[in-house]
Image (cartoon, rainbow, N blue to C red; front, side, top):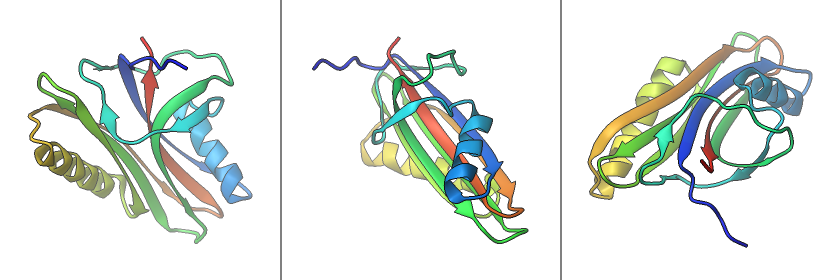
Length: 154
């Protein structure tokens, strides 16, 4: 099988409530606009030259490589958050990091930015830009927050 090098990436985040963890996750995916994809979970390298693009239309059911994180909460009033960060390299590949916690989206964004900076530094890469998608949610019964980076073939 031949794999295509992704040429574009999209960062999204969403939140939702449901009767179960899985239903809340599904609602969070719907909120992020990615509920009808089949994810192939990948790790954290952003290919050299990949552009960050807005969400694109897609055919429901396609296989989509993605880096993602999620968190569920069950305590009414609890604040949960998830974030993904894309580190775009200067003339090189970059990295993608994900983070989820009980807390605010602002805090999750700060943490994921530091994670991206450390991963780029560890690899000796210069950072052109860091793009972050973050979301938070205050749980009512069973809540979920998801953040993802999708890899597009063109």
